Every structure is written in structure tokens, then in C-alpha cells.
Image (cartoon, rainbow, N blue to C red; front, side, top):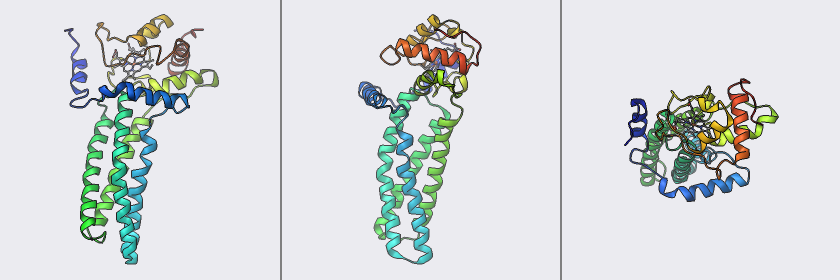
Length: 267
Ligand code: HEC
């Protein structure tokens, strides 16, 4: 067993505590590769979240309207909308877990932890709402507070999702560096937002020794290691994931745009 610096050890114990989707890795990769091939380079979960969020907002608005107008059919519709939100909770969370594995290598980032907690709270609220409403045919006075709490929970979930996505990603590139930007966005920005490192802050992308020369860079991303030579949390990127040509584009984007023009292009 290699000895790791202390800060690294804590990451390792936090990582994947009790949860791993590794067994499904080849299946997951082929799904994402298929999406890549049709030009969909982003995580799937953010698109999916519109379903439960929209349904929760809908149930709250209809619940309020039903109360104000004393209109029982509307109250029933509000209730069934909540049932749909519960149904969509499952695929949304499943895609969230898959994206987490693919784009963040299952790392326990703070927004991820918050989202796990809030998604659990939302599930409990939805189940309570569905059970309470089932008994009273959607007419229970308790439903409106449940709709409101669900609404607050999805808003908070959206906030932490936004932190993951927009909490500082990538500087925008001029057209010549766009191909490298695409490679960076779909493979690196999750952990190296702003040219930093959200998993091990001591290993920021900006100013990294591995960016000194293209040869060092390609060797590093094919087989990343910590400074003591041990295997760290960064996933390896074989040529099947990032081709040599893409690696050139990526290197130029990182050195010319993320780091600001400080080094010579590779080609
Ligand atoms: C899952 C998170 C994650 C992803 C995705 C990721 N990295 Fe890293 N990166 C790390 C970690 C953690 C380290 C520290 C070294 C290690 O773990 O091997 C690191 C280190 C680095 C370093 C060396 C930094 C230094 O200060 O020495 C470079 C360069 C780098 N990554 C480039 C990339 C590139 C390019 C990509 C995309 C192709 C990428 N990384 C994707 C987490 C990630």
C-alpha cells in the first residue's frame, strides 16, 4: 500500500461511501458515447429535472387556485400532478446518479451532498403528499402545505444544481479554441472549474507542471497521478475517450484560454 498525504486520504474515505455504480460502467459509457455521437455533450439530469420541478410548481399553483376558488376538481388535479411528480422523481434521480458518476467521478462535492439530502427530503414529502391525498381524494387541508414544502425543496435542489453547473466553469473561447473547449466542458470542467480543482484544491489545473509541455500533458491525462506517484481520484482518459487530436485541442484551450495566453500552442 502506498502512503498518501493526509488531505488525499480524506477524499478517498469520502468517495463512494456505500454507493457505487461502477458495475454498470461499460453500459453507462456506451449510453453517453451514443449521446456524444449525436452531438449531446451534456449531462442528462438537468434536462430531466424540468419534469418533477414543473409538476411540483403545477400542483402548488393548482392547489392554491382550488383553495381560493373552492373548486374540488381542481384540487384533485393538483393532487394527481403531485403523483406524477413522484413518478418522475425516480428517473430524475437515476440520471443524476449516472451523471454524477460520469462527470464528477462519484466525488462527494458539497453541492452533491446537499442534493442527495434534499432529494431524499423531496421523496419523503412526495410520498406523504400522495398517501394523505389518496385517503381524502385530494381534498385534505394538509396537501397545500405539502405542495408548498415540495416547492421549496425543488427550488433549493435547483439552486445547488446551478452551483454545480454555473458555480464557475469555463472561460469562453474564441472560435479557434472552441473544439478544445467542448472537450474540456464534457470531460474536465466538473472538477477543474475556473482552472482550479474542486476535489483536491492543492492540484489546480492552472499552473500545473503537467501543462509545461504537450508530451507531459498527454502522458498525465492518459495516466494521472498525485505528485508522490500514487493513483489519485482523477480518472484516466484513454484514447478511446479523448483522441490524440482532441488532446491537442484540449491542451491548446487550457494553455491559451483557461490559463490565459501564457504558453505556446502545441501545433
Ligand atoms: C473527477 C474529477 C476530475 C476530472 C473529471 C478531471 N480531473 Fe484533473 N485532476 C483531478 C484531481 C483529483 C487531480 C489531482 C491528481 C490526481 O488525482 O491524479 C487532478 C490533476 C490534474 C492535473 C495536474 C494538476 C497539478 O496541479 O499538478 C492536470 C493537468 C489535470 N488534472 C488535467 C485534467 C484534464 C485535462 C481533465 C479532462 C480531460 C481532467 N483533469 C479531468 C480531478 C479531475
